[in-house]
Image (cartoon, rainbow, N blue to C red; front, side, top):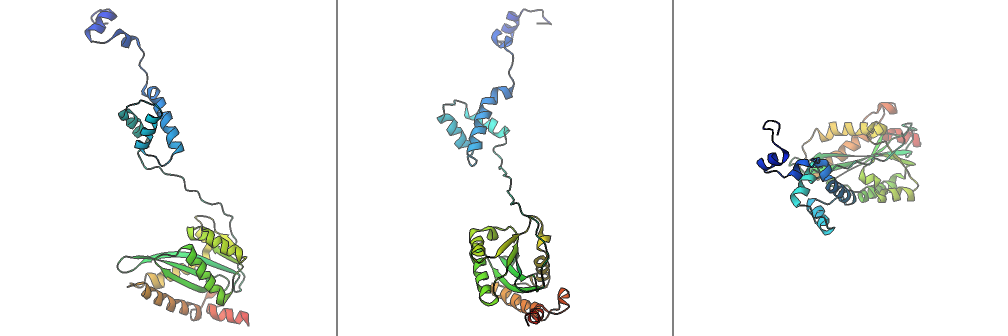
Amino acid sequence: MAEQQLSVRRACAAVALSRAAYYRRPASRDHRDAPVIEALNGLVGEHHGWGFRKCFDRLRLDGRGWNHKRVWRIYREMKLNLPRRTKKRVPTRERQSMDVPAAPNRIWALDFMSDALYHGRRFRVLNVLDEGVREALDIVIDTSIPSGRVVRVLEQLKSWRGLPLAIRCDNGPEILSQAFVDWCRDHEVEIRYIQPGKPNQNAFIERFNRTFRHEVLDAWLFEDLRHVREIAARWMRDYNEQRPHEALGRIPPTVFRERYET
């Protein structure tokens, strides 16, 4: 029109464009796609596990006649085709004091470790430590140690050692399970959860874990679980009865406990 000095009618005819399209202001894509975006947000917000096909079928059942290619384009632009990450909810815990009286059965500590056999099969380790006398009460080794197994271990310890006033532990699923919580409540044992991401608040058993990993897990190639259990039992017996502990006046934990009880 500017170069050839043509009217709007003749210029639109020359380029095969209707005059209605010439005078209509072009709408932005965001404005055109707003109804589809709103509908998809509503579906995904209410049904977190739905994928594109379920969302599209629901839109059609609701009377939305949008083309599947258009809905898919908008679905991808909203990045709904990517894995949806949800924020991990971490429980709120108060900081626990590490002051422990030098006496048995005041506070026990629980913690899990993991390693692998020579052929690659993974196994788990549950360590139970009496913080007051630094004595290892049990080292449980198996491919899986669920909450029910943790409760059975505590029942076995109760039969010959009695029960502590409190148990210090992290926020693992086995410890947060209802079976463990109910057992502690029924036996009037306080659960002292450490703050998430603060293993130093369970420092006694973390120090024990480091020694166990250095002297057992990293020092041997294990053929099977029986092999691991034999070495761990022998090491625990030596740790409790032979190994001097500086915090106990350079005597083994078992000797310290026997002197305390007498």
